[in-house]
Length: 177
Image 1 (cartoon, rainbow, N blue to C red):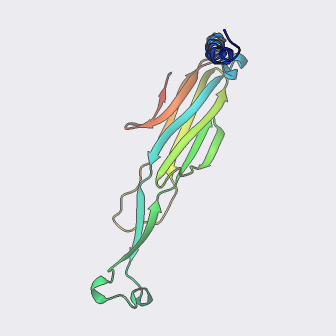
Image 2 (cartoon, one colour; image 1 turned 135 degrees about the vertical axis):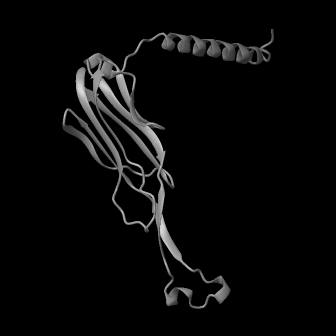
Image 3 (cartoon, helix red, strand yellow; image 1 turned 60 degrees about the horizontal axis):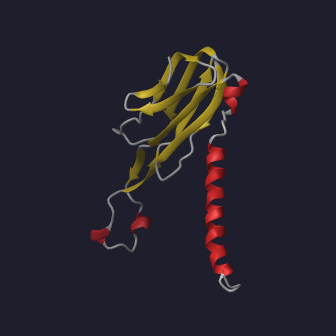
């Protein structure tokens, strides 16, 4: 074999060898066991997770004369409406100790996302969750936005997660009694 041909042969062999090393490293790392810190410390978790499209409200009024000045008569609005999505507040208590209370931030135009995690000592605990609209002014005849409450005893097991979520039936606990 000439000296000029050697680098051409070495490149594919080197690439093949590197590929085998990468595959072996992935296999070795996939066998490493791991556990979340919560399982090691002997606590359970309370997790709240849901996404909700907030209803919108509008306040409508007749336009003021200065708002329609310069607009042709046939194009003048009969009402001007202002509004937006209804803000909601989340309150979570465990055994009458408030864990969180405050407004829920919008993650999109009308989307509210809740994702909270709390460590909990294993055992039976009284859980109270309220997801309610912040009071606001609304036109006569408008529908009140929904409000959800959950108040029940929940059993927390060491190393396990209890999930509170919002579904068609309201707030519910998934993964335990």
